[in-house]
Image (cartoon, rainbow, N blue to C red):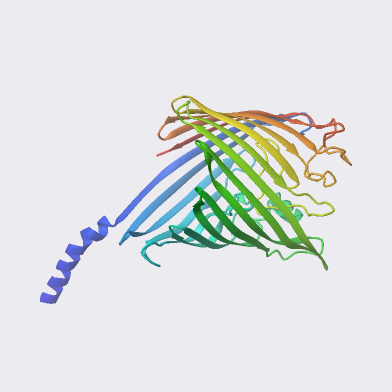
Length: 415
């Protein structure tokens, strides 16, 4: 009886401490978007609507010695004008933080579940996947390794589209899940190694697991990236990166070795004292299929522009942006982008392209975005713009490709 009494007393003493080491929060978000895109060459110019409701929870377990485990989960329901329902698991991850595990100055982080995978450049891969990631950081060295699987992502939300078979599956309502690929990342970074410049070397690879038919191509690729980022002078920052793509494409019994290049350069100027003004300059080049190089194909198919719906493949993009905060909680951004093909013999996969273009100029895109944080839980943004295609001797398109206009309103709230 005395032992039971002592045990209950110990539990009573330890329980408040255990509860103090556990913290959980949850919330609900509601996002809505209404957009209208118009172009004379489009068959349909109907408005589009999207409403997404999500519930999330976050739990934090303190382990002592400044170590902790965080559990984060988010599920959502999405309604669109062409799809009445879509239930999805957006995030489901466990992340641990362990300072001093591999030495007094080390910090080890481990993540498992569904979370965002991003490569060194943010252009090759920036997508959710299911997998694991480990980070080991020291004051002068940061390392990262991750492996993930994309085959459990729902087909409508997967943006892993590298081959024609992947693109065809994207429009197939009978396909429940997106393309099945294994992605792997490895990265070594040296923060502020010289003149506050950070050098990063990364290796990203993906392996196509498609059980392809004889008329379907598969693609396995690797990407070796080198990046440099840091300040240039007061209020001016830059980021530079270069990537070599290597891999093999297979179609039936035929195979082909592939080599592509991608380069990205950005300069940003900040003046918080001048209404939070920001000026940005950007230049991106991704090789096309020519005599010496093959088309650069990223893993996640993000679009090159806000209106121009082309991936960062066979592309030269220049961009100038200016952002200002005229009144508190309201940010206005103006962006002008110029788009060219990297190789004129590699025709872009969009409508209205000349059979044999003499020029490389795709066109010019001008957009304006006004974002307002009305309250701490309510945000509103309005985006408008136009893409003017280029035709004639210097252009890529025929005269049938007309200007495309966009107007979109986004509202987000949470509690």
